[in-house]
Image (cartoon, rainbow, N blue to C red; front, side, top):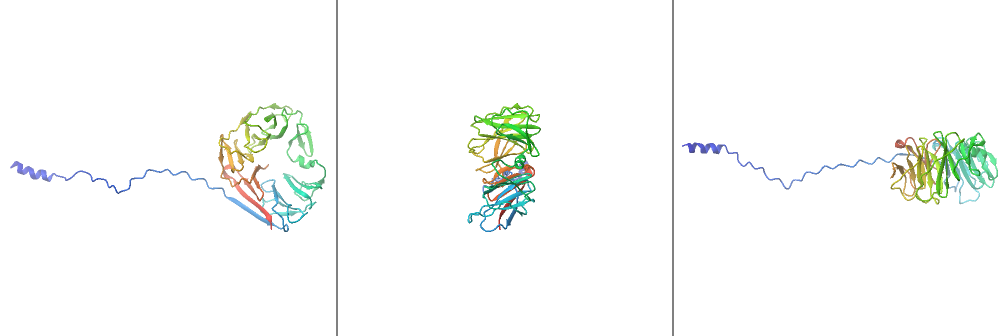
Length: 355
């Protein structure tokens, strides 16, 4: 009787098959988490200022020289279809948005050339001599001979090298005065003023040399420059936008990558691991960096490495730095201008052509 009563009880407690169903082999396996790479920063926008001016038929594109981000001159002087074509000069004071024609004192010359720095415009008109303007091209003074006009020489910087003597001279107005002491640099190539220092650099026997003065040339101190791999043909002192003194040393044939130095109380070599075999132009940037351009495009030397830049600069652009801090990339058919801090530069492409 007990057995009969237990049987239904055990049957009522049964909960069936407690095993889990087998997994569905047709269901997709869960995907592993994928970390997407950070997107590359967008290429900088470039404002185009494309202007056509009336110069006559047959002229090729002009040579354009910017003095500041706003002021520039343009010389139309090449017209292969005609001989003795008159040169045509234009100027802008609004960064290439508009151009006005200037009156040239000599319109026909052999191989006319244009040079400009802040405050002075000079035209070379062979065999007639040089024409110099200090009022933006409204009037010109004429000089003959091999020596450059005094106004032009004075505008090249307050401190300059007098190459025949190897001394540094100081310009005040139109007069140059030698500094008291001669810098102990063989064959000096240039002088700059940086953070209260005068810096002179040169080359002797393929090695770089430099000296600094803290008292405006009354005394000089030799400052050893670390010798790079390979011979150096030219050493140019430069000043970065932050006022730091730099050196750029080019190989004798200018076919390689330059040696770079910073002045941090002493000259310190700037490594550029991964740099291309060749560079054509170099400009100093802030915090010890350098911008470089060449056949492989634009790059930056920073923290001991060379890295590519996303600048709108092509190998054809030759980089320079204007006195007002504007970065310029000059090419035969256009000029690039970059203003503002490195991380937020404003780019402008200036194109000027015959109408």
